[in-house]
Figure 1 (cartoon, one colour):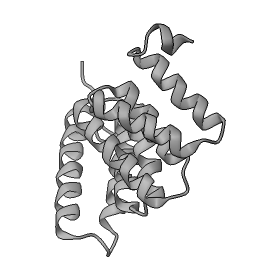
Figure 2 (cartoon, helix red, strand yellow):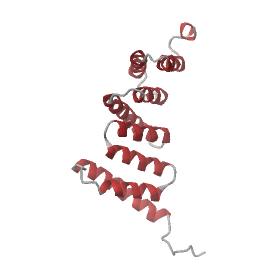
Figure 3 (tube, helix red, strand yellow):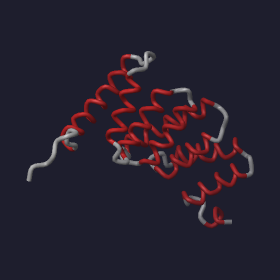
Figure 4 (cartoon, one colour):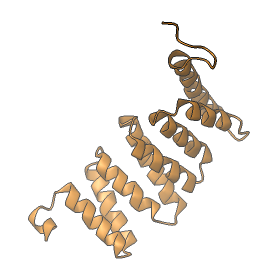
Length: 162
């Protein structure tokens, strides 16, 4: 009855999709979320709801679609930890361990864990299955983080002299 009163309310439409998922009407729910995403693709709230719905499916193509949606949202909201957490999960489910590990590193960084982020990216670079573009992108991120660490964190054994 809420949708009858306000059929364009994004929150009501999301709740309707969630209700369909709860009723095990996954295909119908995914169609509802897809329509929402088409209409309001810039909305982080809708993108997260749609990605979550896609991840309830057992299909790796749905997980890949969720990862794509989340990657787009991450470009718009680079500091949103909810996006990187979900992106790591989606990339892993889609069979993309490199993107998953990169998202985990980004999440560490967002939460103030610069040393953990650097360590994660170093481990990713050790993979032998990286293509040229992945290696270049991850190396550039790692270099930026190392520079930031040098600027913000004293080396072990150094103390500030005031």
